[in-house]
Length: 443
Image (tube, rainbow, N blue to C red; front, top):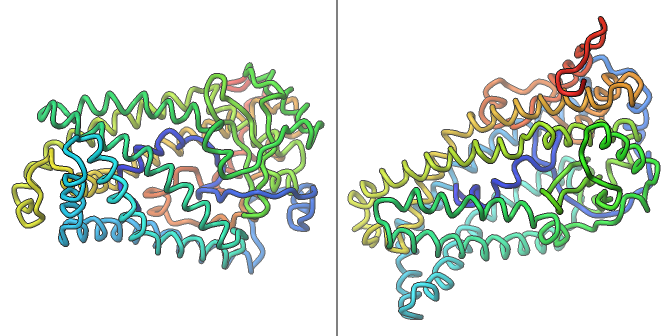
C-alpha cells in the first residue's frame, strides 16, 4: 500500500480492465487457441454453477485467504512506513537537501518529491515482491523476475513523474491559499485525471505490453466484435480493436474497452483467445462495452471526485491538529512545509481505507449492471447467451483461481466485482425474454 496519493494518480483506471473479483496480472506472448484442456472442456460443457475440482478448490480458497491477509497487511504496513518516515525525520532531511539545492520551489520539488516517493516505493517493495511470489506459486504469474523488475522500474518512473508534478502543484496551492487549498487542488486534479485516462492507451500501455491489430490475429473474432459494437451503438471500428500479448507474464485472462474519444479501443489478451471461444469473448467484450454505454466511467469518476473532495477537506481539517501535536518531534514546521507530506499521506490513506467499502460497493453495482448489459447485447447474437456467459465466468474462475466461497467480510471490504459464483447464478437465471419481454438496457 503506497497510500492515498497513488490512488489519486490511478483513479482514472479503476473501471478499465477486469471481469474478475481480483485485479488481473498483465503480460505478453503469442499463444495458439485452445491449448488448455480445462478451458477446452468448459467451452462445450453445460455450466449449472461455479464448481472446481478438489485440487483447484483448495488452491482457490487458500489464495483468497492470502489475498485477504495481504490487503489488511498492506494497509497496516503502509501506515508503519509513513510513520517511520516521520519518526526518523526522513522527510525533513529531504526538505533540507532540496532547500540547499535551490531557493526556487519548483527545483526544490524535483529534488524532494522523487526522493520521498522513491523511499516509500523501496520500503513497500517487499510486499510487492511477496505478492508476485504468491502469484508465481499459484501459477497465475509466469513472468521472469528480471522482466517483473523492469516493469516495476517503469511503473515507478511514471509514478515519480506524475507524483512530482502533483506534489509541486499541491504545495503551490497550499502556500497561495492556506485555508482553501483542499478545494483548489481538488479542482486541479480532476482534469489531470481525465487527461491521464485519455493518453493511457497511447502512452502508458505500450510501455508494458505488445499490441497488434486484432483483425490480423483473428478476423472472425474481429467481425463478431464489430457486430456486437454495432448493436450497442458504439463507434469502435476494427482499426481500434487490438490483440495484446499476455502469455509471457501471466496465465490470466482479460478483454476490455479502454480510453475515451479518439483513444477508445477494444483489447483482447492472447491468453483469452487461447482459452475462450468467439462467443465467450464477445460476451466479455459486451460486458466491458456496457461500462461505456451505461456511462459508468463518468459516473465512477464523479463518485470518486466527490470522495476525493471529502478526503481533502478532512485532510485539511485534521493535518493542522496532527502537526500541532507531533510536528515538532517530526521537525515539520507547518502544512506548507514539504516535510508535512508523509503526514498528509498517512491521513488520506486512513480516510481512503475507511471509505473503501463504499467505493467497492458502487463498483460491484456497476459491474453487475455491466454483466446484465453483456447478456442483453449478446441476446439474439449468441445462442443461449446466458449459458455462454456462465461458461465465460467458469473459465475466468478456473484460470484465475477465483474463490468459490468468499467471506462476506472480504467481499464487503475489498471486492470491486461480484464473486464468480454470484455472477454465474445471475447469468443462468436472468431471462426477461421468457414471456415476450425485453431487456432493461438493450430493447
